[in-house]
Length: 470
Image (cartoon, rainbow, N blue to C red; front, side, top):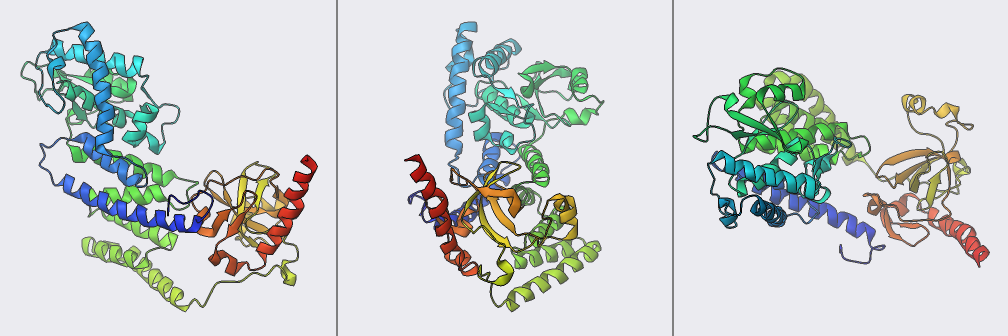
């Protein structure tokens, strides 16, 4: 289905992707849970990070094998540079998959020097200061493609390369800025934080003392925060970052990143009451999976009976939602020929342009007047429009992935219609013709007279334009 001609079978593709998304996520989540059952000395930080990457991007072709192959290529470049520093360096004799460690500090230092040259000078990896709060910075396949990331993802790349070359770096869950530590003691391990140099992979591999680490974040911290952390704690921080980004999302009305990061966090820590409550509220807000909401709420009540107030409120409203769904008799049908719709100028499926903001969009619904509440009307300053809220308003899918509600006077025909790359296009339309979208059966039931109006508009607007050009 997904390989069918690009502009056709859009609804089939939309739901095929939904099914594939869900099935792949279930498999990945099971793999992650099995991975988390490994003993504490199992330190495949990269493998854990790839599971997170895969779960948040289940439709992308991401595998540990491919990511490891890209890192192996980086290791080869480092070896080439290292050979110029010390042609007899023991790391040059390592075979792929070996986990040998070199103990001499000077030899380790040579590896790190070669790494810094290759990663930051030759390959131009750098910390992403300009677009720090972007989820792509946490996905390892994107870090390798874009050659940028945030401290934790850059550190995992740096650590993986270093360990393959025999340098036993360790992850440090430092506040505000993830670091790596490099032991300077003869034994290769120490409880004294001053026996370590701390490496800032985000800052081009800069080597820091304890005091310089404090300068980095502008505050004094306790010795405990310089300690090494296990795989689960590293993944917790990565998912915590994604969770924070998911809460900030403004455009994605499906809150997909928030939903995915909640799933991941609760897979690691299934009894986090506040996150379970957030998950239940999110599903309730989106109006999806009411039976799942009730299961979550029951689990919360078992874990923390003190939450009975919030739980009771959500249980009541979820049950009401289920009852309303049972009572629904059908969808609202909107006929253009009806007297109250006489001012509606545009039709579903038309490619439009916003006069003020310039964005391209496709109409997937309309109302004869603004149906939003007073607060929305006030916040959007609708009263300042010449026709105010007493004019048709249109539901539109915008090319940036957002869904908006636009006044008729702010829209105009797009003289150069183009496909709208919105993830929900297939939910409403079955095909893109080159000038407009054709509604799927479900949308056509709601707007049965719009398709004929679209054909008339296309004939008048685009055929006339073509004739003028000739």
